[in-house]
Image (cartoon, rainbow, N blue to C red; front, top):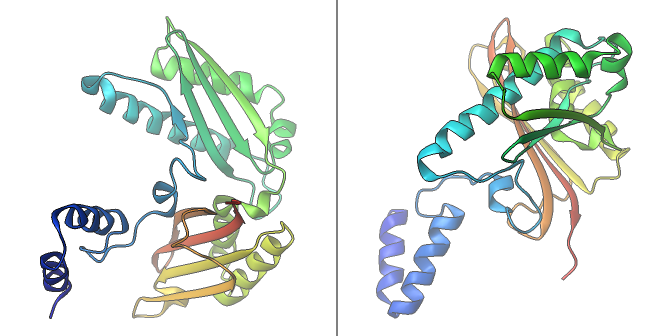
Length: 252
């Protein structure tokens, strides 16, 4: 008996009100399709907030969404080119975009912003000018700010970049993951799960390897969990890194 048949039999035993509730819950948790839901989207409105804050008419919504993605890609490319390389992880944790009628506020959360500022003291002004030229902002002012996060290795994006750098240097994936977990423990996190998929170590057959340390309650909505999916190109092909970090749990 497949999953859809089990759901149908279950619905037949419920009244109309409970049927609607049961169908809604199946859609929310991805039960009917057997898919895994994104931990960040699952917690929007509880422990997770949006990284883009603006309003647009339905016909202009897709244009604003594409503009946000282009801004993020432009900033990541600029930082990658101008960052002073000295460690395995000096990336961007997240980029928040707030749009008003006459102002676009971009906040870049970085783990090690000094590596960028020391290399290019006027880097922020240069980035701001390049963005204005690229997107032709004439009637709207663009403001860029860089914020340093307190515990860089408690962020999954920076941690994934660290693991990617280790794998590119031919370090064993188990050693790279264990080192990343040690760095995460210094950031006072409650749990972490790291998963790597692809031709790990250059093997002919792709596989999935994962390691969990501590608690990672993915089904608890009140649990504050940070997540990222990070692709890495190696000489053997593309590997996928997924990281779940359990930060804290909201009090009831």
